[in-house]
Image (cartoon, rainbow, N blue to C red; front, side, top):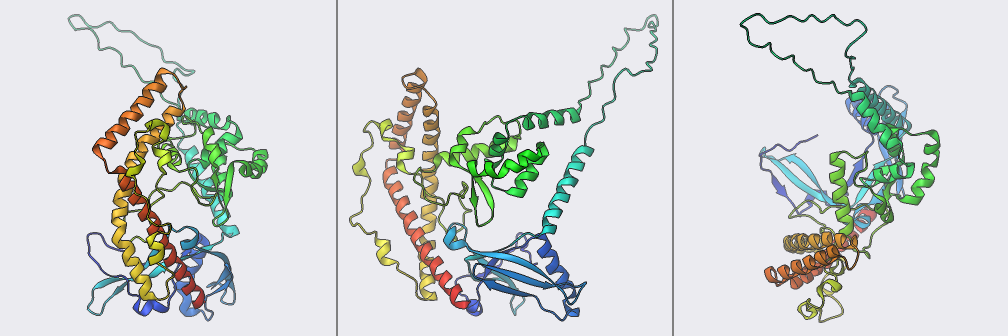
Length: 458
């Protein structure tokens, strides 16, 4: 596999598909078994008469790879196909090919946008390998346990006290030995603290950190101890507190369950607590009427890229960040620009794409305004994050109390500071929302065009 070297510049041919215009690029996610089968075939393909093959049947299919040890037999792997650009428009990316020019220079060429993803399904040996890895990890954990030698054994040596010689200062005080720490008991205490908690709470606190597939969740629960009865009831419990993402088979925590999260959960490490804090902040910043599949998890903003084809995450609504009952009429609604037409101008300008040249023009327009959108989004997010934190504190206080009044006054003070230091906040927020909708519209048209091109190629 080609690798990019550090501190080396490469020429990038972006925007012209040239010889790759008749190709369709896909993102392929292999299992360990499928990868080993491909590597074994690559090493012995010159001695084999059979060829590997791939067959599509709607959104599913299968891959056949000859077996070097049995030339007349093949290994079959099933897969499913999903559209990345349509189902998750913030995760599309381009395929880059590395090659060597006729002058000997290493070049990079853009083969096109990846809109479809092939995910190879796991086989029985994949699950067996996962179990073996978990067993090996548990053995390594047990082998690291400390052996504690009890002080003062059965045969205690007789202590002899000798008086110091005349003229010699007091004897050196006896060195006090530190009491050894029993790591095994410490680990056992941690496990018992988690295993003694209700089974529902254990599942919720694991799903709060990241999505899990069911086999992965069972293996993780086994680390802290799990009974067969708990395993049998896991399916019903997941239906109550989690959403299933049918595309990758992962479970994500439902929104209402985040209210049951304990920040001082004994099963959390310091890193887990920091991750939980970021997750809860993102959840509080999401608007209540946000659109999206129920199986999606909170996601951070994408990496900064001038050629990125997807806008960052949705801007929180103004009602979430600057509630009207806080401002007491201080926010002048007339300062926010309003559209002079019911139909935005970008809907009239950007219609369905009919050619590759039109697609490239749309992407050029996208890249021209993406940096401005990213900067506006960053500034507005820094402002709204502070109000979100104060909002969360205010909701936990009793109305009429001294703490409630103090927090309320702090919110008003923060708002006055924003009006003074950034008087154009309303215009910038309107501009940011406008660019978000415009770039999302262009992105959607590009994804639809690429999908039609892929279907015509099939």
